[in-house]
Length: 419
Ligand SMILES: NC(=O)c1ccc[n+]([C@@H]2O[C@H](COP(=O)([O-])OP(=O)(O)OC[C@H]3O[C@@H](n4cnc5c(N)ncnc54)[C@H](O)[C@@H]3O)[C@@H](O)[C@H]2O)c1
Image (tube, rainbow, N blue to C red; front, side, top):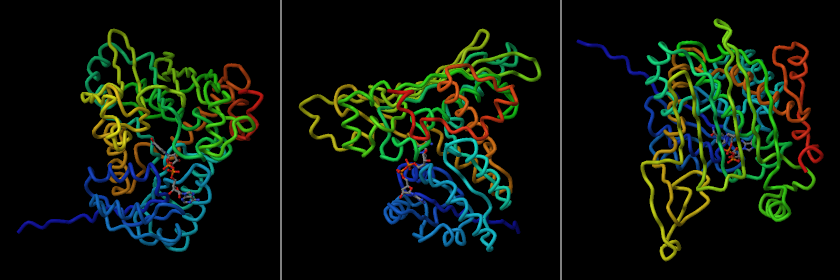
């Protein structure tokens, strides 16, 4: 007789029940071996639990606190706003000390609003002996992974990519706290620069090498407030989101260049990033490309195999443009439709990676220490923009300064820089 060991699905608990929590549920629907069994949040928890049941991804209980939930799940995913990371993690560590048996903890990007916060989170996870997963979905995007697999033999023969360009752009985030630099950590550079910086570094990394193989050498960056500081848009932001960019502005555009060194060959490679909240096209666009000797790749998520056309006469019948595309800005004309955004953007593969890692008692592909490294690069970009100079990441004095650096914009003092 053949004996079969039946693995119990990983029981996941969500802290936060907003936009990304809903996206992750759609991802979980496509991944076996995990289920949502708990959720806690000041807003939206019952609705999220109901959605989980509807999608068949788990009989989630709504808990009053992180502490209570920690005793009923195997793994906790922190999907709460950036300003809540430390308090959530403090409660989680206390729950583990009091006996909660957690295999691991997931945290959405960015790990912290600055290096100090990110380091505190890494230290807290270590102190509770928790395995970690930093959710940077773009590294898991199937187009990114597929180009790497397809180009692996070419790269072995010709050498790695030497230039990458990555962008994430849309018309602006969906909740007021994102716009408030003191709560979110800044503007678009903190919110989406972390994505583009991470994926830009990843595609340049020679295949088979670790995720932090390439050594950051220098960062130069600029930030600007190009749209949402203008009187009409500033008023609209104040009315719609309760955030006053005349007093506490954040950047809606950021661009920069990071130079990395291959420690084995000494070769220098460059990753350019661009992020905006003032992108006036159909909706969210992720763009990545890379150029190597004799080969290249390009990803553009606004180029979908599916487009639809809605004329003026039919436009009133459109129910929800955002079901076609995240951050959709138009509901008529020729529109791109992405029919599986959760998979396209890498959410399915990042949560499958966390499931495998925690099941095996190890960190995910991207542990929190990787989130800390990315936070350092983002802060170096803010520092470059603030000081109007190239930041030398090989200088130990600069690295020490970055440990406690809080950008003026994040402090709510960005008016002189941005207006
Ligand atoms: N990977 C991505 O592409 C991506 C996309 C969107 C958001 N995010 C990240 O996910 C996180 C959440 O973003 P969102 O868009 O879901 O925000 P949201 O505002 O839509 O939802 C936030 C949820 O957290 C809850 N919450 C608020 N304060 C809390 C606290 N102190 N403790 C516990 N829960 C609390 C809210 O009630 C709400 O349910 C952010 O860190 C954001 O950067 C990542």
